[in-house]
Image 1 (cartoon, helix red, strand yellow):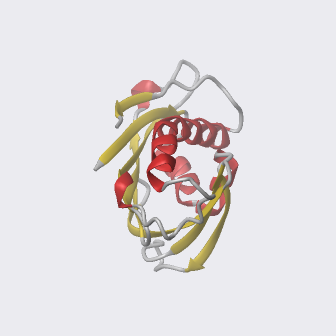
Image 2: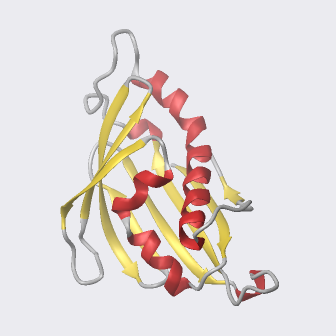
Image 3: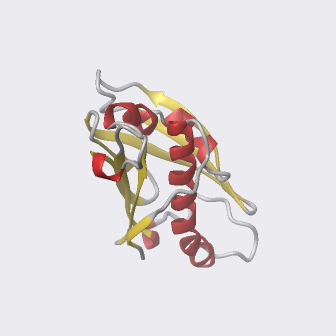
Length: 176
């Protein structure tokens, strides 16, 4: 299993940050490769059990991932798992970090994004590949881009949370 774990600081409280983390349908704003998110099934009052179809596109490929929210502890954690074709799961974690707030800003939160996945678990029949292109070739091309994609998602998420873009310092705790 490979793991990506990165974090950054948003100049807002966890209660202000968390609604952005749980708003899956807004995720296409954060990455160029996520074309759309469609809620397939609602969850309980906290969102647990909600299922989303995430339409991803890259190069000549398109794929719809199915993600389920498996745990929510508002305003601190949201856990998800992919439900078909790839063994993957992850967590968004939001922790108070008032000491990280710059002068003139009341509070801050540290946002963690973690994804754990097995790139070799991908079902080769789930993706319609161009002729003469193997799934191993696709995995080899996509895998190095995953960390940069995660960084871009977190950068854009912080801009959305704070209402303006700024230089965001990302800490990479672990990468494949």
